[in-house]
Length: 499
Image 1: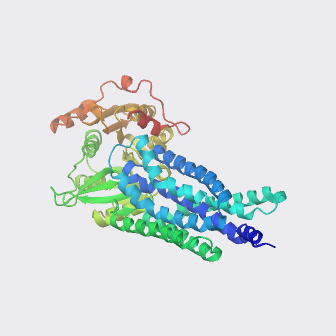
Image 2: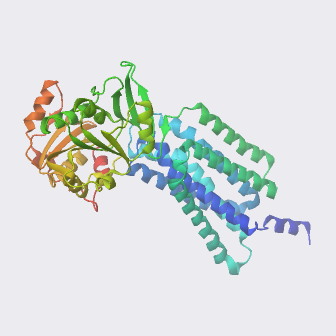
């Protein structure tokens, strides 16, 4: 046998079957790990919305398509045994680069338009998805030995790749995000890919040392970027990027940021100090339409626990239940914002819609809805079915007060008012100074089964010179707006229409 023939045969020697499966499963799983983590990494810069996840999924799918095509072409023109270590190491290096790239590009500023979300997702995740998706075609090329078994070989490796992707999805969503910070997970997966590439290099001895050194250098630079470019979060929970800022003008003041929005303000020394417009109006509504003295109150969303603190101080003896889905946020608020639970305030960790079902009818005087952000909307708390559940747990004469943030078009606000009014017929809507002048801003909805005197809210606003505005004609305001139901609640699209 000639030396040239032996060389051609050695170039096409397949990997051991178990190793081929491990490589395909690991790289496919890594792609989905990054896709799941992408939402948390992008949230501090563009928020969390349907648009964010659409951009992420589309970007990763584009990378998978480009990588599959490019990997197949390269496998036909270059030795796959040389390609595989380089693809693994390059994928690991690009994975580590995700963090500094997203932090740098995300801080360039701008709005949260669809175009900016797509650009940020593409800068962070398109390269790594492309490179890692080129691995499977290279493995397939090596394993194809018999034309009669082509379909079986391709199908088997594709099935294992899909299984890896499923495992990566479940492992990340159900286990990893509760175990470590997003940046830690990305670096660990990137390092594992790099180590796997090195092991393949030692096993195959085909990649050139300079190529391996180049991939390692990119990984090293990426790690330096991870440590040099500050993270925007004090706490990276399973749901939010959370940070607390000290108010330079008020030493005991603290602002709670969740993702890219200010969610709460707390004065550690004065629980009755309300810095945000919407918290003042929520309290005004409770004072205007609820009986004097202690109350039974449910809060949908905790945030910085600003309103529970206020009611604890202003209406002693009140019994309050706070539904908060993020246990890590509650721990941070207790530690850094000095909130204490007690016999008067209990915290239920979990989804508010599930939690409210556990309470008997006519349980609360007031339900406070403060779970809506401008880009992170739990749509299932906005539907007619859930408002019906709120009406069930309200006492006769009870009150539902909700904070809503919406874009200038106010399409979501109008739909939510229409939805609430379909269950609680007496509604008062107060638009904040920004919302009433056609800008992104807060509005407060007040609703009940019994008549509400809108003038009471107007008097409270006039007393403090509030520049907000009462909606005088609700019928005209909600005309043409859909009723949000569980099977049709296009909340993200309604908000996006207003941009």
